[in-house]
Image (cartoon, rainbow, N blue to C red):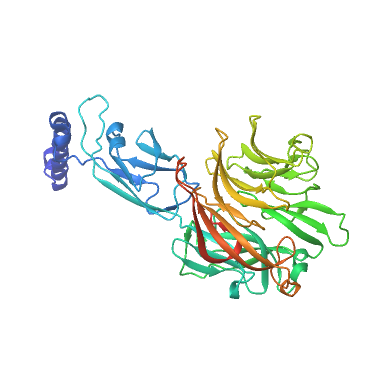
Length: 500
């Protein structure tokens, strides 16, 4: 009976396959010991996954990962990894995964290649080199350089304009019946929060502002030029009962803080918080200028003779109070440092001067500048090691006259480097590029003709009749003999801001 069963065709095939597999497996084991990485049936190691492959990355993307299909000889990989154009960074390993962390934010508007060849695999208990890997080439792009501004002429007048600098493409985002006064990008760049009044309200438009959002056409860091996704308006906060003044958007894009005044009772003056998916509520906090902190959990408010740090909750007690300072200029991206102004009201020897300070959470209060001029605005570089400022110098003479100029401060040494002088500084708005490589600013042209104030007005109530947009490119590195590059952009507007 057993003999008959063995003669069945299926059993013969099964026995043949079992024998064949046994021979093959044995051959693989013996062959691997005999010829190692030279055996013809062994494939070379390869990159299994590249995290930035065909992606568009921004300043907040700080590291990419290469995943290999087997353990690699680290030295051979690190020596042969090439990035074009170069991006300085550091390599770390976790098993078969290589992480490359950038030392500085990636420059915008470029295409990059990651190349790797001649890397070898690693055998755990053997000193001889492993098989050479398959050559790898990956590609990715940084975000386009892009900005938004408020137009001042023609069909752009009073409207929010989006301009892709890399592709030189312009879009008007807001309708002609709204006059935009101020705006901020959401962190992903897909939307803009802005305040606006109906056209024709003139100077009174400052008391008729409502808050809106508008889509930019940027999705996941990429501008979709073929779709109609840009220019979609949504009202966020009306002005029926309360007048809306200045506002700030949290770094995570989920919270808006607005300064509001009761229309029937001007003494009813308060900060309100508007959280995503909720109704606006009073914080029951009075004060002057304010800014949401980088962690999106608290707000810094100028109150009396100091700066209060308060949780974004109604009637919350201050977490900190800095009595020495009268103005907050900017936070570092990590929130552990800030630029502040001391008006020196308590020091008779320094009275009528202002001091620029760098303050951090370790208790350091470093004076960077004491001046009789003005400290208009300052912004930290992405790594928080330098500070770019727009300042003025009080000129000698019978008339009060200030000379505006840009300067860079090294926060480690405290050294100031002047960058460029300007002819005028009225209502200048500055914006540092997300990669820290260029400063964007405007120079507003105004008129005191009351017949022109039916549309755009400055903070002082004068009619805005034009605006020049400028680009200041600081010298790369600490080279005192290299001058900053100042360029006028072919755009007419004011209050420019870079796309994140």
